[in-house]
Image 1 (tube, one colour):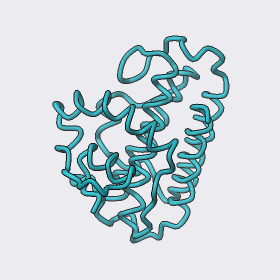
Image 2 (image 1 turned 90 degrees about the horizontal axis):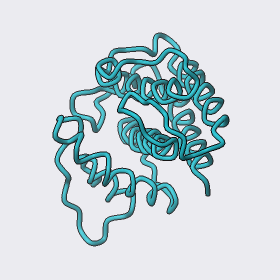
Image 3 (image 1 turned 45 degrees about the vertical axis):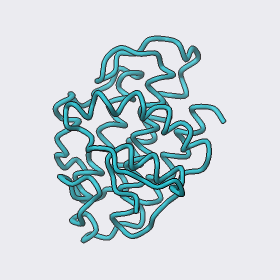
Image 4 (image 1 turned 135 degrees about the vertical axis):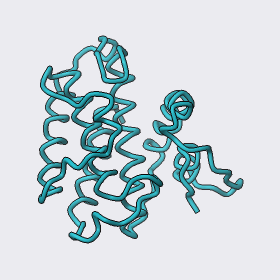
Length: 189
C-alpha cells in the first residue's frame, strides 16, 4: 500500500468519525488531556490544512495556530473536515517525486516524510476522537507500521516541547494500535 492510499484511508476514518458526532460530543474530554473533542478536531483539521498548504501554496495555519486548539469547526464540523480532506487529497495527488522538498510548518522535508507525518497525525487523532466518543478503532498492519515508523522519529523531539506526553507502559500482549498510542503518550487500556 502506498503513502497516498494510507492517507486516504486515515482521512476516510476521520470523516466517518466526525459524521457520527452529536452537538454535545464536541464538549467531551479527549485522550489529549488539555483538549476536548472540539479543540482536538480543530487541531487535526489545522494539521491537514498546514500540510496541504505546503503543497498547494494556499493559506495554512502558523505553527502557533496549529497547536492552539482554537475552534475552527464552527457549526458544521463535518463540512469543515470534508473540505480540509478534499483539499489535502487534491494537493497530495499532484506529487510525482516523493523526494521533492516541501516547506512544511515543521520545516523543509521530503514529500514522502511529510505525507507520513500527516498520516500519522490523522491516525492518532482519529484514535483520540474514536475513544472520546466511545467508538474505539484498531489500526491495520500497514497503518500501525507507518505510525510506529513515523512516531519514533516525530514524537521524541516534540515531547521535549511538551506536545506529546510521556510514553505509557504497555504489556507484551499490547496490540499494534495500543503500542502506537502509548508511545504517543495516550493510555491505550
